Amino acid sequence: MSEHNHVVDKDGNVALGKVNEALDRIDPEQKEVILNNFEDFKAYLGKRIHLARKIGLGEEQLAVAAEKIADYLAAHEEPRNSEEKLLQELWKVGSKEERHRLAHMLVKLAR
Image 1 (cartoon, rainbow, N blue to C red):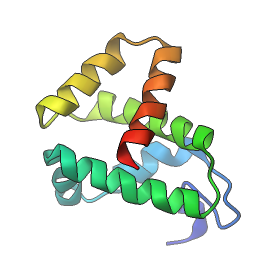
Image 2 (tube, rainbow, N blue to C red):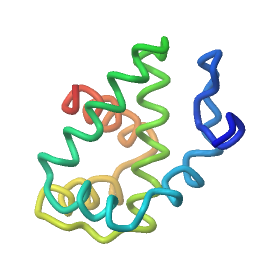
Image 3 (cartoon, helix red, strand yellow):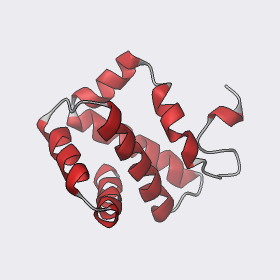
């Protein structure tokens, strides 16, 4: 897959506009495995956060990316468990500022 398909390029630049495309490309079976169990979901996020930190993304960049992912999940995926349902409900009622703080907390949780 060429670099233009990735959210992060080889120089560490983040193209947040590509987050939805990247999430849409995840195989439905793999997506189900990731989202079916909250511990698996946290582990998956933890791996991605580790990789992002390794290429130099900072805390704020991670939180902004987490916001984009949470927006996508809230709009396109049904919660598979009670933890995801709670996160979705908090996301729906939160202001932009509260969502941003929640994104920071999700990054912390998944580390």
